[in-house]
Image (tube, rainbow, N blue to C red; front, side, top):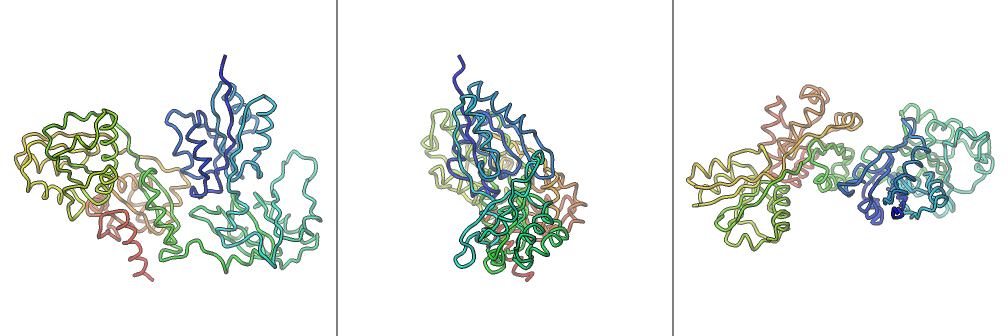
Length: 498
């Protein structure tokens, strides 16, 4: 007999991954099967198990639709097969998310279910635009209204005259195409044509924007601005507070759009730093570290360990633990790293590096290790990495140099929307030569990037060399060859251009 499965209805919030709840992340990590919508944060599923089955049942306004009946079928089938099914939705599953229907389906078929509420776009989008949906002396109540009712219904469920008389803020979901009708009905019901209105498009996301007007003008303004879903519309006096209370995008990089090309697992730190400084971040991961099978031989006579990247550090120490060894195996071994980022990854493992070059490039590390008498060295790097350090050791007389390659860097394609947003940005950041090469390829080639006007920021000389090899000159090179150094270089460049 198959053990009973269960369903967890998860709200993933409005788009900013920082607004996902702890419980939502726990549920995603425990899932056997994940049915997800398109309007979830891009990194929402990063914590899913490698063996979890991910199924796109996405719905997005004006785009392709997966029939709800098909979603119901998949949800039932997998749960009845004894799996833990996590249904991940943007926003909150019980706020215009059809979560109630899916919960009823589970109850009808005797399937255990749980609901994980999420931050809803009707509150978060306006808040990120500086609009409180309630405010003493302005709005003591708020009503959430769908702007896109079920087209199969014979008549509307919205009582427009009552809604027009509602003494508070009105927040419309999914109502971009219906704006002319919404404004018309509210004015006919008695709302002033001059009442403030604000539309927040892609609220909490890096390319969020707001369009403000009045009931009389908002439809025309939205059309002229090309506002698209997902958007929420706020009607009421509080909508006028956006200009006064707007906070997103304030700082030394306010209004500047920056492309982050690091792998997804490493992008969050630099993306967060940029956002904290006001930048609009476009996460466009074009590389991914792909794990390879490797083994760490006996370390008994190794006297130098060279680690060339944080990814290599993590893979090396993970393998050490999985083979029932730990940092004690490195007693008496000098540890050399290529730069500050790798040094920090080593410190996390409880070791202080012995050798850190002044410049985070292979040549500097090669110069550093060549000054030591080394009998047996071990180098941990990506497959296909530069051979500068290994060659320097061999040339210096080191009789044994082991090469361990726990991963390789492979290209990751950009979806059309991300590619377009990246080419419309102000800056692109590159933290490695491979990220530079793969981004140029994913973007359509060096000529496309040059013609876009995108400015290029490099973490260091090797990355800059990769850009020059493609015929592009970096506009900025970080003085300190770290992600934070790259952020600092962008801030300095922005200050100079003001």
